[in-house]
Image (cartoon, rainbow, N blue to C red; front, side):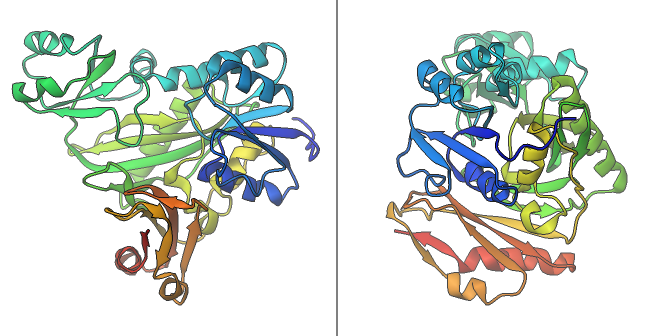
Length: 383
């Protein structure tokens, strides 16, 4: 195992809220963190050791940034993988590995990976364009309802269309995609798993995600998930197997469906810290952000045990409000015990933009859910 080196120069591709919370965790260990982000006002700018403004998808920009650091990681998948592969060939330590990022960037490759490695997932058919969709449905008449997903560049609910009947076919994407059979699910779950270079893994307890009905963004998260011990174990084991199949070094957030017949299947994954793990800053022995550093620096992984049941509420920009952000209700929120707001430092709000999150902790699970709903009603982000 490598010796801890606080003088290692670490680079992060992306300077958003995930990078911000990674830096906050890195401060405890006095790590030197450099940031590359296209936004001159990125949340990370004021905390990073150095900040470079530039494109994450431009080969030369990513390559030159990587030349200046010893270890390179990401907080977003939409990066230039060719540059990362070149850096890796030259001996730079790049985690998660470029080969893993390349698969996960493409939902088609991601779904095929699950099938090839016998990881449970919803049935799917690859499509090349819009015209392909009616053709494959003619051969598979029982496949609807289904979701048509763009192979690349879809995120946070974008790049997904529900196809319930023939009248919806015009909504299909005219680009390479994947038609995924709709799952009759009871809950949406997530497990974050960490893996270091030694192959040591550690999973966080399963959480339950409740999505916003319009925006497909996580609205509430509850930890631990209200599932049986066997379902929790099954979810953690599937997440662990998925991470081991990828051979990833770093964090892998595995989003899962619990079906009505009590099967756990993989929906999709993210090779980085994730919205489903923000509560771990306050509610677990080790946060997901510290765990990411432990994994990519090849250090012993931390204890993932729960200190307190928790809920997380995403703080989204209010509909109808665009412009300089105002936070209404913070004073009321700060007077509530067990409520911890985290603001991301984004100066401009837009409808449903992720502006922060609030973690709520309580030993009373019923009170936890009620408190989370109260918190959501109290705090608003307006312009």
